[in-house]
Image (cartoon, rainbow, N blue to C red; front, side, top):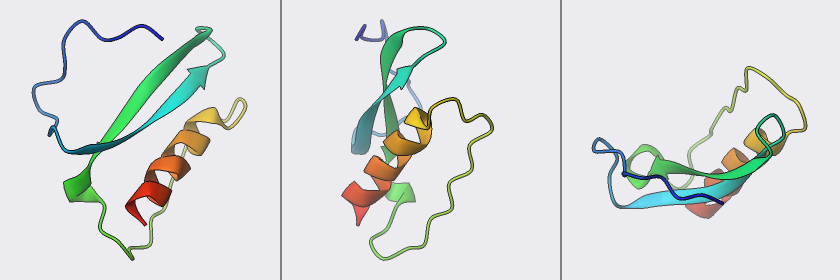
Length: 68
């Protein structure tokens, strides 16, 4: 996995993260969601605009599970 050259300036440091493999680019990427957007006990709806092998959805489900 290649690290980003610079971190996003608008993303909190306190995040949930997961790794997602991209079949189109043959790379693994780290995805992040700020903890302020996920509260324990919430119902979360995940909508993916393209489902090749479910890796993006799997990574998002991993993040939601970490947030309980």
